[in-house]
Image: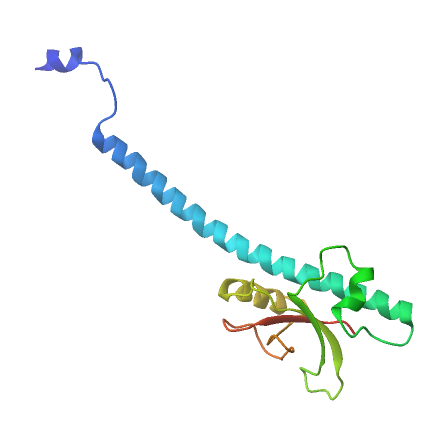
Length: 157
């Protein structure tokens, strides 16, 4: 019997070996998908905040150019922004989310990227000191980003 085993040449992998390799590849692919999903949420949150900062800078340039008034609409910011930034996902409003008695001008994102994962990343950015406010599609509010948050706002003035 030992002679038979020594003379036998392996011509391929056994079924068990192939199944083990497939299982390991499946586990690694599943872990990669989890990591990639979290990265996408962080990238979307960063994109939203970056665009709001660009709009805030455009609002400050508008004020400096006008010398007396803050912008009233996103259309007022278009000459001061890079092309393609203004869209229907962004809005502008005047509000007092902190109840200080003084309205401020806000730019906000109210598009479809806001979901539970992106809101969690926006809340982490807010907690790290980024001056953003959660809110509805119409106005900012005070508080934290939650699963149902429909807007992300930043004060211009």
